[in-house]
Length: 210
Image (cartoon, rainbow, N blue to C red):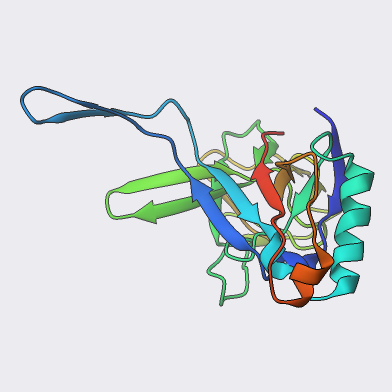
């Protein structure tokens, strides 16, 4: 898939609105009960970046970014203002934040993930666009240094350990990450007079699988 490893203007992103979307098919039975099923394995995030546009300079940046991505053609990185850390938003990521897996004495490659637990249920999200330089890794509680202890592919979210963890050793990580998205429109409709009057342009973005 066509994807540019560039970050959407972060000051605009951090004033955007949006969040995760789920799809659930519901069939009402004659008994009054429901049958519910989801055709989606996971959630899909969508955003309106127009809320983050505060100046004419922001509009110029958005137009340049839109043209360089050729509308919906190329995906790009977006810093979700509500969900971009392995930890809570107000906390600082640590190497114990997320469980990546357990060693078997042979495997050295682990995928970054983020877990969303609530009560007895939990959702695990694959993280494929970590922020370079932000990833912390620990094996059996012992921190690993990037370069010597592990390497990171920041385009896939894969961690490669320099040595296979012993059987039963837990591998954990902390990190910052971006969400892969694309523009959800092939045209930008910006009215300068309306913008000066406080009207917010619509700049829809949608998450993509990579």
